[in-house]
Length: 81
Image (cartoon, rainbow, N blue to C red; front, side, top):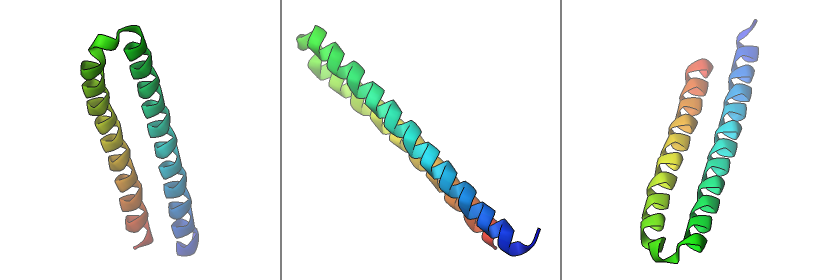
């Protein structure tokens, strides 16, 4: 396999990996928000606690997604060199 094909496959795989990462993060945050809204509807007095837990979990999901995107970019740059 020549170098040009390897670089093309590196870019393709990084794009697919980044897309899957964003889809996973979107699904995770969507499920999290739905559960938080349902919990708030069932027990309005716990809104503050639910919101705090939701924001912490959303931050962790976003952090994992950012980490995965950085790994995709680093692998692409390493393959291109």
